[in-house]
Image 1 (tube, rainbow, N blue to C red):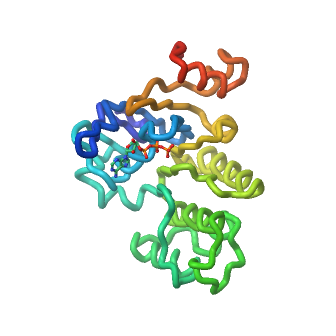
Image 2: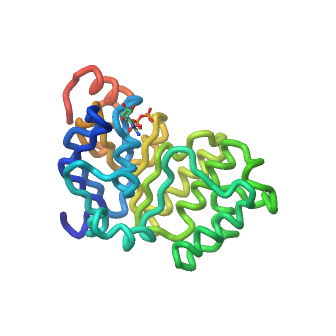
Length: 243
Ligand SMILES: Nc1ncnc2c1ncn2[C@@H]1O[C@H](COP(=O)(O)OP(=O)(O)OP(=O)(O)O)[C@@H](O)[C@H]1O
C-alpha cells in the first residue's frame, strides 16, 4: 500500500455458517477518488462494507484504511470514516438535530456543525420533529448527514441515493464531487443506478459471487464501451472480457 492508497483490501474471506459469501476479495481505492461498487443482488457489496467498517470480522485477509488495520485500530479509525450501511438506525423519539449532536459527542470532534450538515443534505427545516415521523427519504438524508458530520476522510456509503427524490440525488452527486475534488475525501459507494456511478465515479469495481471481477477507470470503460457503463456491466455479467 502506498501513501496514495486510502483503502487496501487483500484476499478477504467471510462466511456465514457454511456459506462462504466473500471469496478472496481484493480492492484498492485511491485517496481522494470516488469508487463506484457494482454487483448484482446478493453479490456481497454490503458484506464487504460491513467488513471495511468493522461491523463484521473477516475469517481471513487484511483491510487497511488510511494506513490503519481496521481490526487492530478500529477506535482510531472510527472518527476518520463516515458510513451509511443498510437502513440507518436513530433515536426515534429525538429530532434530527439531537441525533446528530449525540453522534458528534460520541465521536469527540467538533465536525462541520449540525445546522450546516442538515443544510448540505437538504433537511434544514425539520425542527423538533421526531425521527419516527420521518419519511424514507428524510431518514436517508439524515443518515448521510450523520456520515458527513464529523468530517471523515473516508466515506463508505451503501446505496446512498436510495429513496432520495431527483433533487436529493442531484444534491448528493454535487456534494460527492465537491468533497472529493475540493476536500480530498475518499468515497466508496455502491449503487444499482448505473447512471449515478457514471456521473461521479473515477473508478468502478465489480463484484460477482464474492470476488472482485475487475477494477477499472471509468474513463477507460467509457472509451472501450462507447460511453456506456451499462454495456460494460452487462457484458461482464454475461461472461465477457474484463478491461
Ligand atoms: N447475516 C447474514 N447471515 C447469513 N447470510 C448473510 C448475512 N448477510 C448477508 N448474507 C448473505 O451474503 C450474501 C451477500 O449479501 P450482501 O448483502 O452482501 O449482498 P449485496 O451485494 O449487498 O446485495 P444487494 O444488492 O441485494 O444489497 C447473500 O447471499 C446474503 O444472503
